[in-house]
Structure formats: structure tokens, C-alpha cells
Length: 385
Ligand code: MG
Image (cartoon, rainbow, N blue to C red; front, side):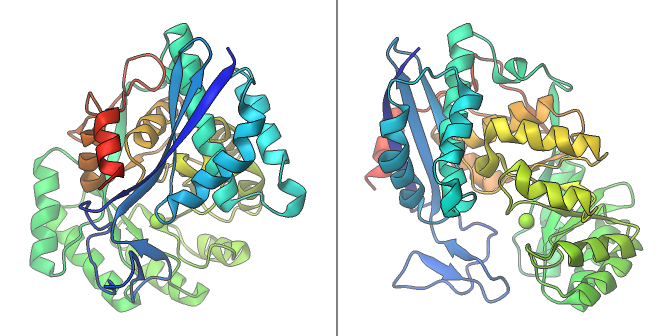
């Protein structure tokens, strides 16, 4: 089943929701901006990279790489570096292809970032092809589903006042969700205050998580964690800088509550140190950055360290979300999957059959491959906008 063609679709959806709600820091002269409270560049658009790989027998698969900014960069890597190698390869040799692509720029220092994101888009498309070729869903190819509905937490309550935040959180609770993650990082005192009133409003059995986006020093993170423990917060995400493995380990050791990290990491090699040093209690690989093949390897390695996986999911659209669901079904040491309601809405506009997340659970797509079909007319019209 030889690969015949590879098409890339860098997507910038102008009318999309602004990720994490707030648009403070938004600029007039650029799509990109930095919010005063966080370090990362964000886009005013919803951006991603979709890839369609077609084989000589006509079976095709869709892949996606998480690309919140500059999806054309990831697309160029696939187009210029990968395509000449991939044409004519047997699409079923997924693991072999992953390794060869990874090896191709490794000694030059490209073993993360855009490079692995590009590999991810290819990897996901190849799994879709394999599933369609044998008429089985991807979760089955991975070894089966440990669960047929995937527990989900609502990510973010993008409102500015206490009253609005409580109101929106209670609306989610009324819709059957029992877990919410708050995106904070506004300072130890303010974060603890927000967590306290949300806990009071949602009740003691509701699952609450806090993401602080790498905002704190080690002492600040410990100080915040001690306050959050009293509120029974399930995990503290990204307390300190992503490179600071020892610092994160220190936070984790000092606290009884779980510390979660991993969205910035791409491969088993990068997760290894975190596990060896017991630097966190929960790993959060993002399927749009690690792919299906590497996600299984990371999860298996984490299982040996008795560490659960709570996959990160931010602005990936339908292909990425579907791949995350299949993968989550197959991970034995799975905890909970992130859910971005506004992103999902846009994702579903590009799919012929919508993905479903209701009453706190994602439903597992049952069709062959990823079980999602991209509406190509819609995709092309969104590309040209
Ligand atoms: Mg995060």
C-alpha cells in the first residue's frame, strides 16, 4: 500500500474563538500576541495543520499536528523534508516511518518542536489509513478499548468576574460534567482565592484542577499548592518552568496533591527524565504533538512508573480530537481527557459527522480508522477566507 501523494492544509480560522477566552494583549497589526499574564505567543485565529495522505490503492488518511501558531512552518517540513522520502513507502510501516523521520534530523538537534509536530501529522494519517485498510477503528488496532466512553474535563472558564465564572461553571455542572480545570497563574493569592470560591460554588464532590501555565518559582508553587490542597484540588498543572525538572520534582515532593506536566514534551526520551526523577505525578502528553505511536510508548513507560496519563488537548481540531479519544480508550493508566468546548464546536464544522462530548464523556468514534471524515469543501472554503 504505497503512498502516492501528500497534501498539507495549514489552517487559520479567522472567525474562530480566541483560545482561553481573554484577548488582553491583542494587537491590530499581527495575528499573534502575548497575553500579559502568560509567556506564550497566541493567535487571534484558531490555527492548525491538517494533512491528507493518499495511497496508490485510493485509501487515504487524515493527520493533524497541533499548530497554534505558524502551521505553515510544520507544513513546510512535511512538504520539503518528508514528502520525497514518504512517496512510495508502504503506509502500513508506521513505526518504521516514525523512526526514520525522527532520525533524519536528529543529530542536527531537531528532536522536538515543529519537527516532531510534523512527524505527528504524518503518524496520525498513517493510523487512519491502516484502520481504513482493514476496516477497524484505531483503538482496536492499538489493542482494544479499556473504556468505551472517555471521561472529560472542561478546560477553562473564560470569564472575567467571580459571578460570571461561577455561573458558567454551574452551567457545565448542570449539563452533567463533574470536572473543570481553571487556567490561572495570576499570583498565589488571587489563584487561591478563585479556587476557593469555585470549590464553594461547585461543592465538595466536583473535580477541580488548576493550570498555572509555568508562572511560579518553586517556593511560590509550593505555597500555592498548600492552599490548594485544603480545597481538595485534584492536580496543579505546570507550576514552574518546563525545563526545570528538578524544581518540579521539589514541588511534587513538598505537596500531597498531584503535580501534572508534559504538554511541551514530544517523545519518550523527553518524558523519561520526568519519570526517573519522579518530577510529577501525572503526565500530560498532547496527541497533536506526540502522535498515536509515541503516545502509546510514553503511556506504557509511564505505566511502569505507576504514573497516570491525562492527555492535554488544546486547539487541535477534529482529527486531533478523534485521535486523542482513540488513544485515551487504549491507555490502561488513563486518568481524564481535556475538553475545549469552543474548539470542539469549530472542529465539528469541518467534520461530516460531529464528535460528541456530553454528560462528562467523549463518545468513541466507531467507524474505520479515526472514524471521522473531513468535509473537504468546507475545509477549502475555510482555507481561502
Ligand atoms: Mg496547560
